[in-house]
Image 1 (cartoon, one colour):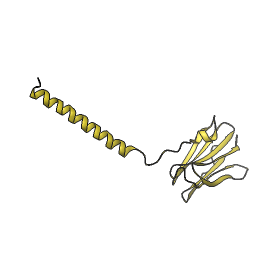
Image 2 (cartoon, one colour):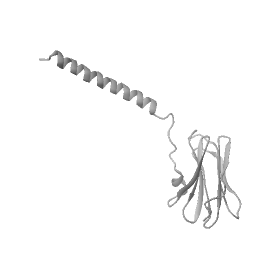
Image 3 (tube, rainbow, N blue to C red):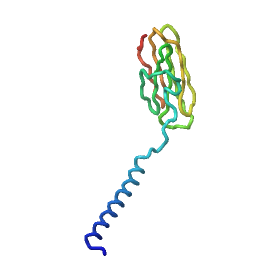
Image 4 (cartoon, helix red, strand yellow):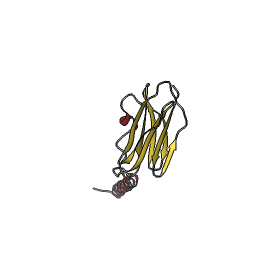
Amino acid sequence: MRTISNLLRSRRVFGAAAVVAAGTTVVAGVSAPAYAANPYTAKGVCGSGYAVQRSHKLPGATVYQLYNGTTTCVVTLKTTALNKATKVTAGLRVQGGSWAYDTGAYRYYAGPVKQRSKGKCVRYFGYSGGSNYTSSWANCG
């Protein structure tokens, strides 16, 4: 036989479960991204053995400079307009050499741009969303 106390307790539990369920739905709806994340990573594009040395955020992308002990790699990964071809650029200059670029209308990233750089300073470049960035000379060695 159900007592009033048991009946009230079951309603509170049911009510709390409904609030939790409703809250979960709302939270899930709000926290779900409006777009998928870029399936590529800077390390994945450059290859095994590379580690990120520097990066810079641009509108709709981030440009990364990576190094593996002998070679520098630069890649510009898009963060918005994924799977839609938009202009992005990745560039690299090793001291004593000239700039090397990969530029075009890409869906996920520009690059990789790689140059042997052991014992030399490097600069990197990125373009996305109408803005560009050129780093200072660094990572000399």
